[in-house]
Image (tube, one colour):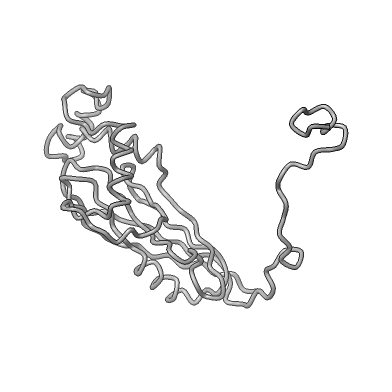
Amino acid sequence: MDYCVFQKELELQSRGWIPTFHDISKEVIDVVNASRIRNGTCSIVSHHTTCSVMIQEASHDLDSFDLEYLQHDLLDIMRKMIPDYQIENQYRHPGPVHAQFGRSYGEPGNFTSMNTDGHLRSAFFGRSEVMTIKDGMLDGGEFAHIYFIDWDHVRARRRQVNITIMGTIDEIGDRAWKGGAVINTLRQFSDEEKRKLPEFGI
């Protein structure tokens, strides 16, 4: 069985005045098709520490911010947990040393380091997702879309998503474990336990 690795990078442009949700489903599927890998895994990874990757249903309806309703619901929850950076020194980060470090790398001002909310949301939410490839198809269920989220809304920026596909061009055959029998993961109480638990009325 031959094992292959296929890598591509997607370039994106975020808006900057509000967190940006990029639907990259079509592009990822195109990369999977180009890889010719029939069975394996596809990892979708943010190149940036203020961005995340999410697999979720598309909610279709758009609000006046050009966000799908489900995306804005998620943003509302994240804002309750990790408020937008609005006031200088709202968070400990960035301190003066970090701001100076950013300027040494050509940042246009200290304001570009005031994206602590983006860093915390990315750390909380995660920067990557892995999906299964079955018979040449990305297995996301019926409704899955792949979103790249740029939480950093300090300024408009170019962003990069790294896609790595690993697997084989060979057929796998039957995947069903134990003939596809439904696995019972519920706890099975012994007769002794049932006698000691009043819930069973024994």
